[in-house]
Image 1: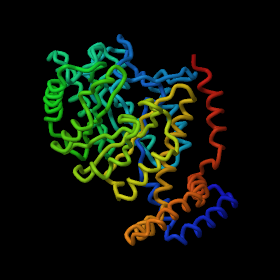
Image 2: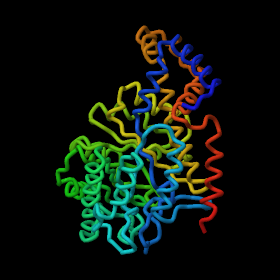
Image 3: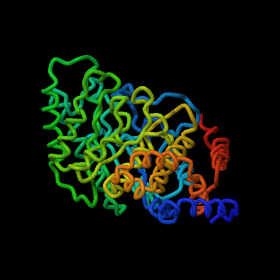
Image 4: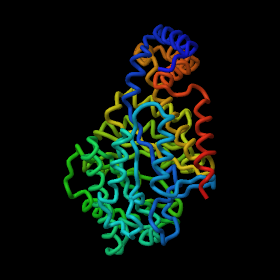
Length: 422
C-alpha cells in the first residue's frame, strides 16, 4: 500500500464513524474487490470495430464527437485499455463485439466468424488477468440496412443473422472455456419501425422462431451464459421495437436465459433499479448494461447519479451480487476515451461502495417498526458520511493515485501516445 498518513488517519476516523451504525468498512472493501465490472471495448474506438465496412453505420448505434486519438487497430485498443485498467481498482472483465475480430485483413462474413479470429484477445486477456464477454453485432452491415435482422421477412437475410448468432455463442463458449469463467454473450438487435406498423405481431413471431434456432444448441453454462436485451425505441425505430421488454422478459423466463436491462432502453421516467427485484423473482440471473441516458438513449459516460446509486443499492440490498452481471455500455467520442473508461468504471465501483457502506440492517429495522420518520432521517444522514475517506483508502491499498492524480497519468499518455495518432 502507498504509505500516506493522512489517508490512513482519515480512513480510521471513517471506519469508526461507520461502525457506530453497524457497518464494517473493512468487510465492505473486501467484498468490493470481488465484484467484477464488464468494461465495454467499444468506448475505445467509438463502436467502429475492425471490419472493412461497406455499409453506413446504422442500426440505432451512434457515437458523437471527434476527440483525437481513437484506437484504430486491435493493438491500439488493447494498449489504451491497459492504460485505463492501470487506473481502475479491482479485477474486471472486458466485453467484445463481433466486429472486433482480427482477420489479418481478410474479409470474413459475420456468419463465418469463429474462435480463431479472437485468439489474440484470449492470449491478451490471460496476460492481463481479464475475463471476456461477447456480443454478436447485428448492426453496421448491408444486411441490416433495412432496420431488420432476426425479424426480417426475407428468410435468406434472416438465416444469415441466425448463423451469426449461433457463431457468436460458440465464440463466447471459447472465451469461457479458455479463461475459466463463463462469458456472458448478449444478443441485441435493432429491429423496429420508424413509424407505426400495421402489423406488430408477425415480426415478433418471426423473432421468436429465429431465437429458437440460435439457442437450440446446448452449451455448457460453465463456459457461456446467454442474455437477451430489450429496448423501448431507437434511432429509426422510434415507434416500434420488435424485441420489447415484455417480449424478452417472457422469452427469458420461458427459456431460462439472462435478461439484459439497459439503463438507456426505457422511457425516461422508467429506471432499471426498480425492475431488478421484479425480474429476479422469476429469473436466476440478469445482465445490466449501465449507461447514462440524457433525454434519450444517448449512452453518456456513467457518473455517480441518483439512479446509479439506486442500481447499486438494489444489487446489494437484495443480495444479488452473484446473480447480477454488471456491464457498462457508454460510448462518448467527445472526450479522451481512456478518461471515459476510467471515470465510468470508477463511478460504478463508487456506487457499489456506497451501497456496501449503507447501514441496511438499521434502515430495515426502522422500516419494519413502522418508523418511517426515522428511516427518512437516517437515509439523509448517511449522505454526509465520509465515504470519500474509505474510497481513498481503497485506492491507496492498491497503489493507485488518490484524488485527481490519475488525470496526470492520462494527460501524459495523451501527449506521448494518443496525440501521435493521425
